[in-house]
Amino acid sequence: MLAKSRRSNLALVPARKGGLRLKITYDPDLPMSYRPLVKQEIKDSDITECECGSDEIYVSLVDSKTIDVKCYDCGNSFFELEVEIEEE
Ligand SMILES: [Zn+2]
Image (tube, rainbow, N blue to C red; front, side, top):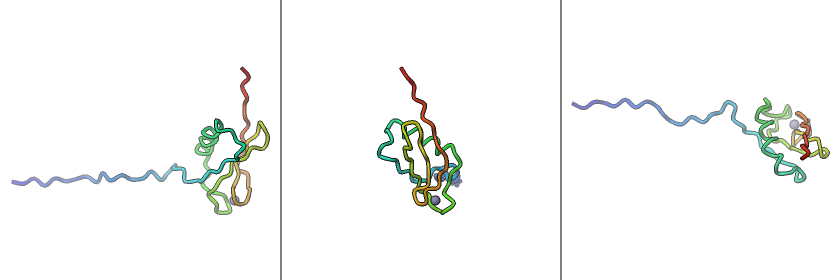
């Protein structure tokens, strides 16, 4: 007798919720060491897209202590990050 194997559907479902589908462009002046941190902050925030419909983010360095996270297309600022410089 043949037993029919019932295969459960174990197809891989891409995790859409919470997934980061934003494109992030960094200011060339932004130090490489900051980038993973900024990216994490953007992930932790609830930004999905700008009110103008763009999903491209531009991370610019305002000055040595301030990073501005804004829309690449319209320049709308989402938030600013303050860099804490640890003196050794
Ligand atoms: Zn925008």
